[in-house]
Image 1 (tube, rainbow, N blue to C red):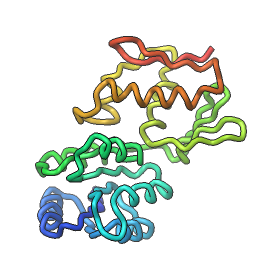
Image 2 (image 1 turned 45 degrees about the vertical axis):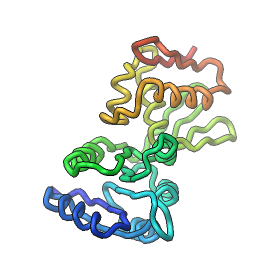
Image 3 (image 1 turned 180 degrees about the horizontal axis):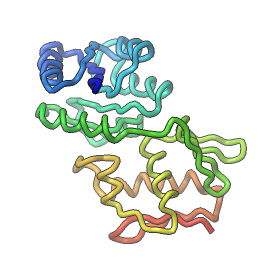
Image 4 (image 1 turned 90 degrees about the vertical axis):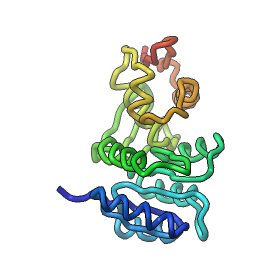
Length: 225
């Protein structure tokens, strides 16, 4: 079985050495880069299974690097590992397409568990499209199309839409959604999930037949009249 290749981007060399050694001791293949630009250049040529990004780095910060990576690969798991702990920083990271966000200082055991979860969880079909009312969801390009309009969706938005549509007319428990796409990160409460659901409702506003209803205390249900 091949090793999981981790592209680890961190400009603090003493920390990077400790983390890289620990990950390698646990069976991961680690490629270290010191800034976002070098990481982006490497990824475009060599790829990786999981990307770990610091945020505050020279040449190109982690947020910018994540946005650029998402332009070429919408599915590779991205984990931010950052000293930026404000809510707006965490939210920005997820809006840019991150799959996880760990605040420094952290325990290496937690990082390893998160990497293992990401490498198992993000397995998508090569190409899948869904016709949802007047819309077409393209999970390969991470876009939602309506007539001549096209909306770029994040990984989590794509997965939420897909999950709701595949279970349409049935309630999808909110706890199942949070565990599936945010793991055990306690930051993502039900209220945070409501924000994502509200955004998805706006995406489908052009087709009145599509309804996403909050079943109070339980979850969400998609109906298409």
